[in-house]
Length: 219
Image (cartoon, rainbow, N blue to C red; front, side, top):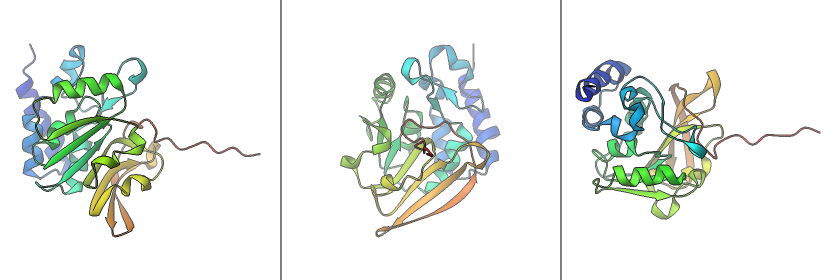
């Protein structure tokens, strides 16, 4: 029988701390949240491997939880305060939302896949500061904004300018921009009507639905 508590501690020590994640709130939250609860039962034994872990089936077969190392580094880059309102885009089964709930003020967890939404609502039912909502990921959730932080749980091939409009002044959006070897984790920050950005580190993540670059046709 798998000792999940020990596996979780090894994940934090071997995957997260070694990736220069030093925020004790994030480390404590990841140590506290049982990742095996957010994956299919048959994959529970894989929950603490350094993987983007598959959670979807059928139409959502490509959906995955981000690697803990990448997820934690993105959360740290967002500099989330205890009073911040966070929009978690592509929450899947709710793992990242459960982590965020432990050190952010409020979390709006957005998912468009019906099966994943149902799972997230069930698993996160006891998290009083998390609201799971259903809608197109690429449109964000403007009715719950503006937000201090927006986290994209996957990559986007196009800059998320429209989502940045759902940020408060001073708000931050963190995502993986691009695909292939040139992809990077990027931090966007809103200042008035302007949005600046900077690349953080090389990264790779599964492409989120609705975030693919539109094909251009040459005649």
